[in-house]
Image (spheres, rainbow, N blue to C red):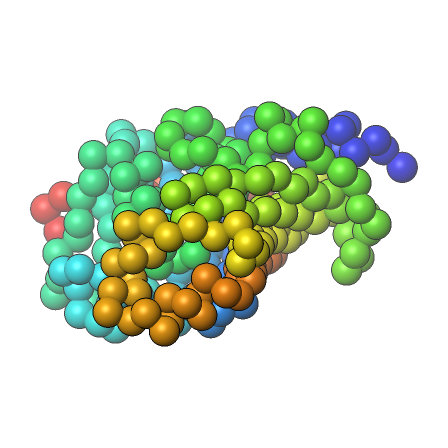
Length: 246
């Protein structure tokens, strides 16, 4: 069996050098905040189409409420980016100066799915990867799970004005160096919590709820599954074409 560092190196090389990439997948969290299905199509150097549909408890400014449950993010070879709901054609496409801006706009809705794979494909998107070579020194191999021969995880502390939390990222890789699953877990213990302006604004005039929030441990889990993954297959440029006059 190959050394974990070699497996990770081969995996990241495969994603960063492929001519095209496509997948289908799903995202869910342990709070019921977001449950979606998604698909990705990428063509080097920076053409991408990411679309998702599902359930989310967040409403999107400028769109009717149901529109927040179906979205296409698209960027063509010239870097023209648009963001639209295919089920609500009467609403105009939104245009963004960069793909990074567009992904950040959608991140809370889609459960930060685009933080996992797209940053591994290219730096052109201006996105910071959840998992990359800088994390090598913190990675530990764990036993294979769910039929995946390679599994690894890293844990680290995350600090903010709300206090400290322990983050654990777990990655599952198959024998073809394809990522099949990624899990992002945050554990915030009561003893490490702090009252920030953000927390105060959420629980304003709700002292009882604030007290309960500070007294309990919180666990947040985002689970990403990737299927129908393919590399270096032909993808029609029409998927990425943006018509500004449409």
